[in-house]
Image 1 (spheres, protein in one colour):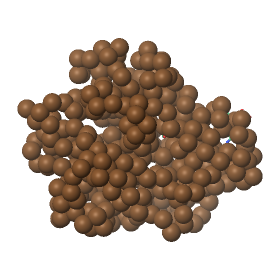
Image 2 (cartoon, helix red, strand yellow):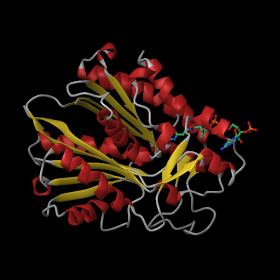
Image 3 (cartoon, helix red, strand yellow):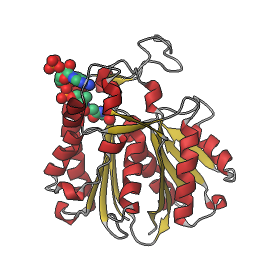
Image 4 (cartoon, protein in one colour):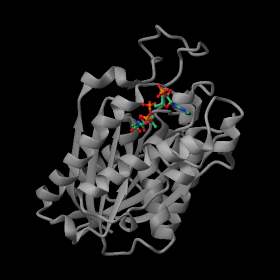
Length: 322
Ligand code: UT7
C-alpha cells in the first residue's frame, strides 16, 4: 500500500506588518479588544502590486529546497485560495510556469479557509492512486484585498501569506485520515459578494468586501471543529491522548482553545500563529505547520491533527505522521 507524506514545507509572509495600534488609528477599536476577543496582535499585509502567485512562488521555492527535490520532479500543483490573481488561468498554472515546473496537472480550488485541507486531501488521493509522484500543495491568500479597511468587524481579523508543502509517496503513513465537509445553508454568514457570474455588487463599491456575522460563525465553528477532530481520530483508530500536535486554522484564539479542550490537549501542544499572522484563511494551516517544524517543536514521526473551518461553510481535517 502506498501512502503519501509531507517531505518539505515553506512559507512566505509579506514585508509590511500592521499592528493593532495601527488599526486603532483607522477604526473605532482597541488593542485590548482585538487581543482578548481574537488573539491577534499583528498581521502581514501584501503590497499593492503583490499578488497571490508572487507569495506562492516564494513559499514553494522554500518547500522545494527543504524537500531536496528538483522543480522538474513535480507533477501535480494544487493551490487552495479564495483570492487568486485572476479568475483564469488558475493560479497553479501561473506558479507552475513561473517555477519552471514541466507541464503537469495544475489546478486551484476554492474552499475559503479550508482550502489547504481540501488541497492536501486531493493530493493524498492522487498519490495513493499512483496518479502523481510529487505534489506541490499550497494554501495562499491576499485576503486583505477583499476587505473593507473601514469595517471593524473584519479589518482587525485578517492577514496575508502563503504556505507550501511537498507531498511524496511513502511506504509508511504519512497521511492517515482525511475528513472533509461543507454545508451551503450558512452562505449568508460569511461571504464575498462579487463573483464572475453574480455581479450584483460591483468591485469598488462599499459592498464589495467580506461580509461576516462573526458571532454566528463563531458558534458553528466551535461545534463543527470539535466534531470533526473526534471523527477523524475515530476513523483512524487513534486515541486523542496519542496526539503530539494540533495545528488548527488560526481564526480566533478562543475557537482554538475550545477545540484543544475537546481533545484534552494542553495549549503547549497547539501551534499558535494567530498572534503574529491574524486569520490568513487558506494559508494559516500550512504556515503554522512550517513555523512549528522550523522552530524545532514539530518533529519527524510525530502525530499531528490539522483542521480548518471557513466560508460556505466548509470544514476539514487531516491526521498525519510527519
Ligand atoms: O476563518 C473563517 C471563519 N471565521 C471565524 O471563525 C470568525 C469567527 N468569529 C469570531 O472570531 C468572533 O465572532 C469575532 C472576533 C469576529 C467577534 O467577536 P465576538 O466576541 O463574537 O463579538 P461580537 O461580534 O458579538 O461583538 C461584541 C461587541 C459588539 O458591541 P456591543 O454590541 O456589545 O456594544 C461589537 O460592536 O464588540 C463590538 N466589536 C468591536 N469592538 C471593538 C466588534 N468588532 C469590534 C472591534 N473593536 N474590532
